[in-house]
Image (cartoon, rainbow, N blue to C red; front, top):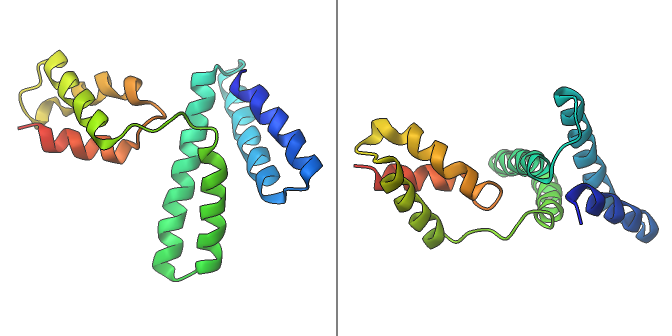
Length: 147
């Protein structure tokens, strides 16, 4: 089942179950997907929908950090709930070990010799981990492993 179809089915189910949180998050995602379709002038593939989902998840995580810093537990709890709904649509996340292995392979593949080659490594690596690993974690590991 395509990701957009799954979102539509889950939205209908959330309406039936009167699950306001899930319904609002799915509507927000569908709106973002529709905006992206308008910008690109075509229907999005599952990979492109996954990119939109990843962006929405990152925004929520950034907001959560800011809310926690500001001591706004009410808003932080809301952001956590939204994150939990979004995670349902993400592929299984890679462990740190798996990311390290992929980073090592990418470094060897592009022949990276120093931190100057970080862009090459990230360019080769990101399509492999798209939606399955946090970009900040990938970046941190690449910096650790590059001489």
